[in-house]
Image (cartoon, rainbow, N blue to C red; front, side, top):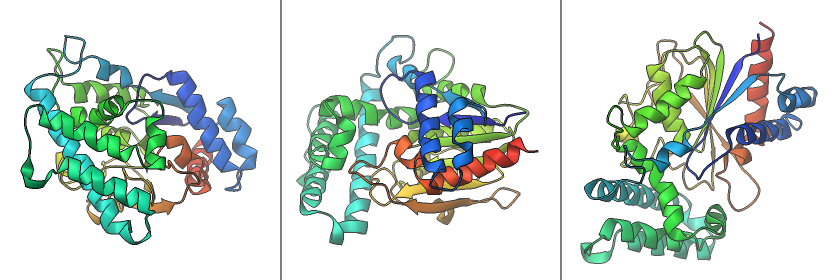
Amino acid sequence: MKPRLVFVHGIGGPRDPAAERDEWLRAVAAGAGPAGHSAHVSALTGGWAADARFAYYGDLFRTAGAQGGAATGPQADEDDDLLAALLLEAVDERLADHAADLPAAETAALRHARSRLAPPGGAQGAGAPARRVVNAVTSLLAVPGLRAVGGWLSARTTAGMLGQVARYLNRAESDGTTTLDRRIRTRVADCLDPDGPNIVVAHSLGTVVALETLHEHPADIALFVTLGSPLGIRGAVHPRVRPHPLATPATVGRWLNFWDRDDLVAARPVLEDFTRPNAGAVLPHSRRVDSDGAWVHPATKYLAQPAVAGPLVEALTTLAER
């Protein structure tokens, strides 16, 4: 029986789950060749290597509660406050860790964004949280690598996508029965094979979603792969992850965490420094990768890295041979 391979995405706009699954598989195949697994490329792209699923939940962000829109009023302010804190911490981490070797233009943009997120003298005013976030994103989009993620989108639209992290972590927006975060985890859980084995590959916000899902749904997880994870962001993300303190889910047999030095989202990336092992003594094993190009955060950039694709293909092959 083929192992189940579950992809869990991060923030963004509407997606075609089948097309995204195929794109992620092609990215793995692109990295598999240089990793010494050329013989498995056709099996990956043809769907023979694994029963691959794309756990799509992006449409849930288009519906807040029963009203069909984004959160408003105090909840929106709370989301914007959290997003501002998340961006501020990510900017501070990048300035602290890489200030000496950042291009001058990026350093200037980061410092300008910081001044907008934390204005001198604590100036606020009406609509302050949302305004601070949009102004900061405007500054960040001046950085070539970060501008690529926004593409043709406005700073306001980009801020809205980034705000999906806050909307998940604030655990509100009930549909009358369950909150947004729980509805999202249900989508991921529905993709897992309860009898296993599973390999779960999660990206960005999806690493938070997947981690919490695996704590709640104890399926056999032979390998858990996290890419560009914000789990280590001290103030805005890490304390809000459930359960807390951060721990490896009980049924995870191996956890590989990949981060790129130029990934603004993956602040404080060595997750094993603050994660508790499960009963099998499994901890994250963090590995740095270095992608070409300005914008390194996309999942497909990570998956096409031989250092990522190699162990993933090896795990799929081992499970298929059982």
